[in-house]
Amino acid sequence: MQTVGTPLPPEQSDEHLSPIAAKMFLTALPEHIQRALLAHSQETQYPIEMVLEMAIAGFLDSEAITFADCRSEYVDG
Image (cartoon, rainbow, N blue to C red; front, side):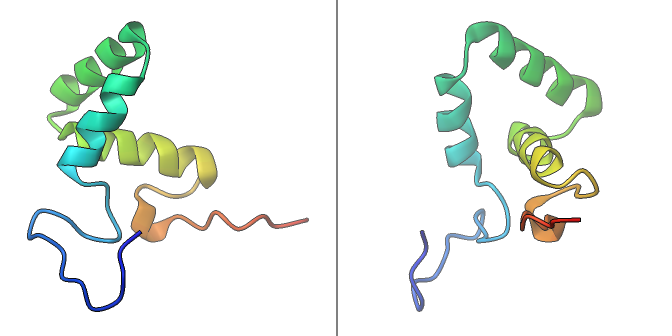
């Protein structure tokens, strides 16, 4: 978690998955999932961090594209 007042590196934002975090996350996944995500990244020409972010955001909120527009709060409805 980022603390208040600590600047983020230029390639990182508190609203998006960083390339470093994406690579660490990717290596923790089963190999066949890694291959599928990397293939999708190549096919769409999106960086792997964007592919992972879209997958997670879509799981938490089916209308979200990225973490920035993800509304993961539970709505009882």
